[in-house]
Amino acid sequence: MRAPAKYRLHQSIGYQMSVTSRLQERRLDENLKAIGLTRIFWCILLAVGNEHLVHPSDIAEFVGIDRTATSRALRGMENAGMIARQAGGDDRRMRAVEVTKHGMSLLEQATPFANSSNAVIEQALSPKELTGLRQVLAKLRDIEEKPLPRL
Image (cartoon, rainbow, N blue to C red; front, side):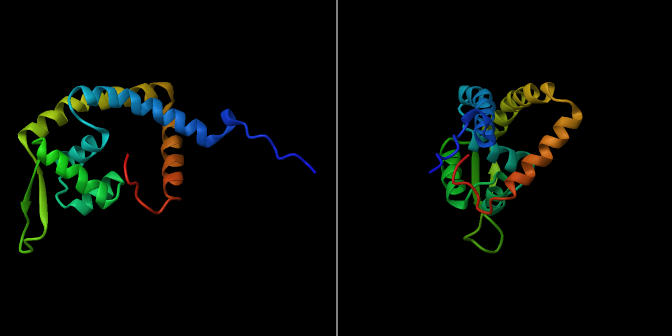
């Protein structure tokens, strides 16, 4: 009977993507934490403050997380004064999300951190490599149909 082929951890694309992702996350997370943000809070601030999304379902889709995670994050952000939720339109059950002055301040403080974190990767790759990487990552994300419960 043949022994199964050895699994080579460092040759695994999943392992390499995971470690690379964790390094990128750490660069950003340390800076976000210093101003009281998590990665999910940061992404939601981007969705609402930069993209002007107001409905939780649109925010969840933009960030790539499920509605439960989005609702939990919105509650925490509202309690921290980063966002406000108002009854929206004719349907009083609908809640429109808006960024508060405090949330905008955090968004402005965090943007240079994110830009700096991305610059580390962008400076290591050529423009052609960056384009290719973005295409490959998008293709790999499209394999999964369900949103993430967390980032």
